[in-house]
Structures are given as structure tokens and as C-alpha cells.
Length: 508
Image (cartoon, rainbow, N blue to C red; front, side, top):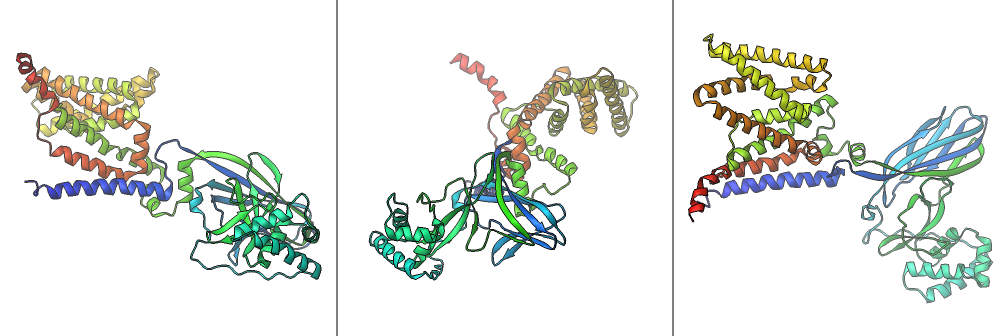
């Protein structure tokens, strides 16, 4: 017997794994938040270029971040009236280019980008086992060459790794009382980052200059900070040439790498580059839709549909949850309802009308419909004609209630039209027959059970987390399907039948 049910259990397991696994992959791949209303911090960075145009053709090029460990580019744009703008890839270096046929006088160009902080594990850097970069040749004048050899001799004697070599060189350069070799080199090369790169390359260690931007909220007129990247067995390591601090600070955005100039202005003079930044908080869902619009999960979702269709699917994705409540209340609890799908549709109507106005409207429509149905029974109509007449009467009742509610100033009166009219007509017909055959008590039992199930389904559907998960992770309906199939196999006593054993417990 157990072996015969094995395929069923395997199918349930497959549904659970497919639903939960796909939802988790969607969350990981597209950053769709698991909780509604989740906010994420982003940095809005603005680069400002000021220069004086000489009255002819003008071309401005600005280095842009390519690989930004710890940050992900969300969007970028430029504000440059009268200029053409494009983002170019020049030998794997991203550059912004502004062009104008004729420009004269003082000019100001803006470039802004939005960056999302991410885990450092997501950075794109050279890993162990990949190719080692070439060491650049360094040419010194004779006095500097001698000073460099002497300084490196002392640093190399106290170091074993590229990072430790860089630290020992910085100790000699940043000493409160540097020796004559360090003084000579600092006088010839005032930029400590460039000097450290030259000394590291001279010692056989691959190093390069990088420009970083420290992100501080609401700061203006900031400039790039020169840093040094040293190639080690663990990849590139960032070192601050001024403080000797090793590692990439969380608030440092690597802006450019290499020897190329950060800003080139052709046809202008007196150029200046400055940065402003501000920390913002934006909805995580909006960020996900912006970043991953071309992702396979987004293409298989409903985000690409028009807003009207998205609203329809938002309600449709709640139907399986209502079906789960109906199955649980009928199979496990043993509650009687007037039909299977009527409570689900009524609960969806409650989402539009809200609970209390929806209950009042539903009871009024069904109550008046039963009175009209009792009159139709005296006319001895055929079933089809009776149902059709009842549908027409239900429409009139809904219309009258809507008008009365509107005149009395109740906005809920208009939303009465969300009730499923065909289902209500069939419900009235079924309750009327049940009244004639089983009596008022059975009508109240099934009608009250239907309303109770509808209210429970409404309370569950109106939870914000459930609304968010059902719409953004539709694959979770596979989990609901698995639960319905499991409950469909239940053949034991229902919870409502336990009262039948109360007398036995009393005797014991």
C-alpha cells in the first residue's frame, strides 16, 4: 500500500521543491524582496565638469567606473544642454563623451549615477589562478635611481609578500624623520601614490594607480583620492598611499584605474572636476524592476504586462489561497458551505468593498433575492427561465443598492458591483431549494458557513506579506497545490465531528 502511494508522495515533494526553489532563485537572481515595503540605501553621485570653451569644436571625455567592488550601477544619465552625449568603451575602459560643434564661454556639464551597495563577494577582481599582470618598466634619473635602489633594499629586507613590501615602503616614506633617499624621491615625485607605484614596479611587484571617491552623505565639491592597487596571491589589494591602510573601505567607490587622465577637454581650458553625493532610500521592488528587466525571471513574470492586466493577475493569484482555505474548512474542519467556489469569489469581492460594507451588501442582496425567488416559485417557471429571471433581478438589486449607497454618501455602495452576479443568482436559487427541502436551519448553516469561509479567506488574502508573495512569486502556488493534494487524501474524522464524542468522554 505504501509503495502504491510512493508516486503521490514524490509528486508532492516535487511540487514543494519546484515552488520553493524557484521562488528562492527569483529572490537571489533578481533581488525581489521577500517582505513588502522593503527599502534599500543607494548613493546618488554627481560629477560636475567646469571649463572655459574657446569658441570652436569642443569634446569632453570623463573616465567612468567600470568594475566597482562593493557597488552596483543602477542607472546613469547626463545633463548637458546643447551637447551630444554617449558612453563609450575604449579598451575596456568606460568613458563619457560630450561633443558640441560650437561652444564659447563658461560651460558646466553634469553626469550622475545611482549606485547600490552590495556584498564584497560580488566584486569583479582578479582571483588566484588567473593571469598575473605585467610589471611596468620604471625609468629614473640617476639621483632618483640610486635613492630608489637604497630605499628598496631596506624595504625588501623586511618584507616577504607584495603587500608587506608596500607597507614597508610607506613606512619609510611616511616617517616623521625620513632619510635622505625618501626625501629625494618625495621631492622629485610629490604624489605619493604614483611614487609608491613606481617603487613597487621597480621591486618587481605589479601595482597600478586607482582613483577612489569617498562617499559621505550630503557632501559637495569633493575630489578623487589617489590610491594604489597591489597584485597579490589573493588578487588586487587596495592600499591608501597616505595612511597605509590596506583593504577597500566600505564607503570608497573605485572610479578609475590605470594611467589615463580622468578628464580630457579638447577645445577648452581651465577645466575642473568635482563630485557631490547624497544617500537615498528607495523601494527594493523598484530597484529590482529597474536592474533586472531583461532577466529570465522578469520575462516569465507579469511585470512586463500592462498595468490593467497586472491588476487582474494580482487578484487571480489570490484564488489558489482562497481555494486552500475552502478545502481546509470543508475537508479538515467539516464546515458546510453553499457551493465550493462561491466563498472564494465573495472573499475576492470583499477585497474591493472591504469587509463590513461587503457583508452588509451581500446579506441584503441574498435576503432580497430569496424573497423575490419565493415569488418566482409561484409562477411555475422552468429552471432556465427562473435562473435567467433571477440574474436580471439580482442586477437590479445591485444597481439599486449602488445608487442608494451613493446618494447616502457611502462609497462602498458603488463597489457592490464587484460581487459575482451569476454566482449570487445560483446561490439564491440553491438556498431557496434548500429552504423548501431541508428547512431554514440548513439554509442558515450553509449560508453562515459560506460567509465564515469567505471572511477567513478575505482576512488571509488582505495580509500585506501574502499579497506581496502571491504576486511577485507566483510559483508559490505550486506549494499551495501540494497542500491541497495532501488534504485531498485526508479521510479521517473532521474537527466539527468531535462533539459527537463528548458524551463518551463525559461517561468516562
